[in-house]
Image 1 (cartoon, rainbow, N blue to C red):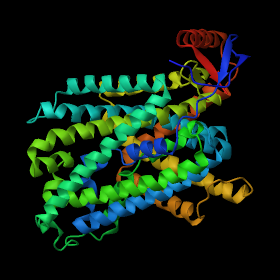
Image 2 (cartoon, rainbow, N blue to C red; image 1 turned 180 degrees about the horizontal axis):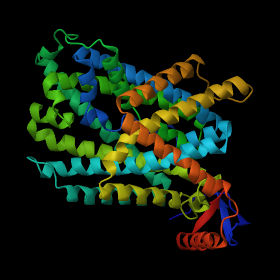
Image 3 (cartoon, rainbow, N blue to C red; image 1 turned 120 degrees about the vertical axis):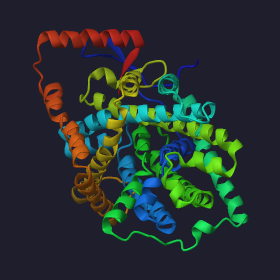
Image 4 (tube, rainbow, N blue to C red; image 1 turned 45 degrees about the vertical axis):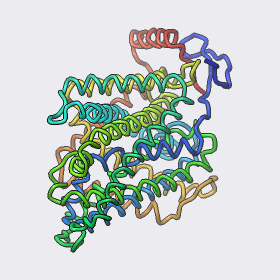
Amino acid sequence: MERPQSDISVDEDAVGIHIEKIQMKKSINLLHCTAILVAVTGHVSIFISPTMILANTGSVGLTLIMWIVGGFINLSLALCFTELGTMFPVSGGPYVYILNVFGPLPAFMLLWGYFLLINGPFWAFVSYGASVYILQPFFPTCRPPEIGVKILGGWILVTFVALNGVYMKYVTKVQTFLSSTKVIGLLLIVVCGVIQLVRGETDHFENIMANSKTDLGSISFAAFFSTFSYGGWQVISSLMEETKNPARDLPRAVYITFFIVMTVYILTNVAFFTVLSPTELLRSDAVAVLFMQNFYGPLTPVITILVGLCCIGVLNASIMGHSRVLFAGARNGHFPSIFGTLQTTFLTPWAAILAITFLALFLLFSGGLVLFIEYIQVFSIIMTLMVLSALLYLRRYRPEMKRPYKVNIALPIVMLVINFVMLLICVITEPTRTGMALVLFFTGVPVYLFGVIWKSKPKSFNDIMYKTTVILQKTFLLGKAE
């Protein structure tokens, strides 16, 4: 395989061995950005369980409205992230923004929470989901055996980790295909819905606003779940260092993605209600499968395979994006330096990818996955609040900074208020879960004091770190990244 072009120079590393300084190859264009965003935006929530929104709206009409509201909230947030992403077009995304604005401790806290509460749990969750849907056609009358699901999920995870470690050019091509499976699956459901409408199956759209809930608590929860049903787009901000023209491509990719995803998600919800009653939908944890079983049973294996491939697409995009955050943190001295290296042949952050892989495999096979998945939403809100605060700080105190893309100042202010309200909802309704997530998040303080601030560590500790670093660098041909 031909080695990608890179800027290389020889440098003496802190551990006393010669290490090449290398850079990631810019291999992501507008098509790749859009493919990644389409895959991760909303993950597979539309296929599996949109029931929480309906449960808190009470009517078909208000449910559709909330899907629209959630889409526009996420579009607004994505545009805010885009402003910062084009200002700081380097690996790391939110971590880099916070580091440049608020300094090392807040940046480390975000990095710690990202690694512990998002990366590993999410990779494990998506691998598990892909495995369930791929195996489901072979077990039409029951759930696939748990051990089989975990083994296949682990194999899927390891396979796509290996692909991401080899060559980004192939990864982005595969991602384009995997993203298409999500669109194909959604369009299949939409076409089935159109057929139902042509047949006159509109019973569930009569009195479309009937039984709508009007209390503030239910409406707030509906907005909360609709917002998180479009989540995941944050991954793209971590890939800016590998994007050919981030100032041009990122804003365009965001607009294209949300036009596609919002349109298809709303049409998919309409299609669901042409076949399923609100009562039937509320009883299902896999709405797409139930929909196809009721519409035309022989197509059920097709939709399950498409959903499984969609999960793999989300996993592939997440491996690309999440690993770059850890890579950026290590490059700035906030994680062991080995995680800030690149494999010298393929120019990919092998060490960072493998670290998250081991955590994900542990959660996948240990049974602790469900608990950690519950923390993802809480940390996502905390991260969003920190990023929006950084954007507003820069607008106020660094107005002279170059901004290739700029949003209206009202947008981050409104989004800050909305996310603060969402965090309050979490605290009030789930104090235990939210409290545990916050405890895990703030364990980053002692870790920071020990790992970053304390420079005079015992010689025995430094010797172990030195030997481990040298062995890993020689074994995997890891070079120091610029």
